Length: 237
Ligand code: 13P
Image (cartoon, rainbow, N blue to C red; front, side):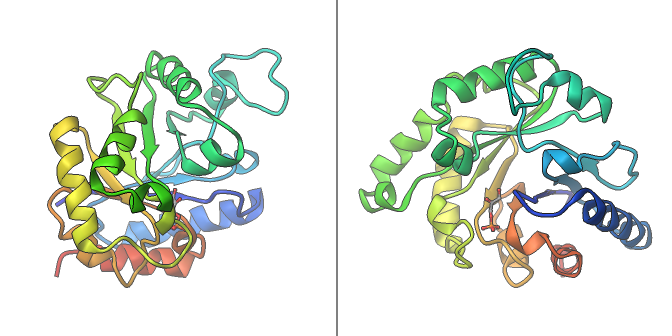
């Protein structure tokens, strides 16, 4: 069955190494029959023209403007030049380190949804919220959906518990199942991805969870050989 495999490069790779990664990946996918939809989110300095046959390039961030005076940001016009039509919004690292509030995330969503972008919208609780129990966690996750139009057809949600990001320790299959089952009740047909220490060793088991429509991967996707192994292991056996 076709699922979504998205790679978030975060602040890794240069223009040169991104191009080498993409060329390698394109060749690999030309030879393999991988049924999944693949997305790569390189840093903004390494955005490439979206000409690859087997995957699409998206942006990790953009400001809700066509152009203007927003020093350090890029807008719709800069994405347009590369034919970029996919965007991450609401990643926990931007919420935490860049201070992006829910209102700010919702504004970004509104702007880019009106322009027909495919939006990977991220939600996820911290360890301290998780420790407060399931009810608090679910209420928190729901609060991160405030201002997001769940009827938008090109919306995907990535559930990424912060405590599982970059730690090497994924949420357990039971934890993913529990939260995803709840989220599915709210989200209905919206594709639901899991993110947080997904790697070649756990992708097969994670993909067996019926409520997992895809994954958003950080560290284990940055090396091409590791990413290829994830793709190989994503195949049903
Ligand atoms: P890791 O796969 O490194 O845990 O990162 C997940 C993530 O934040 C993807 O957006």
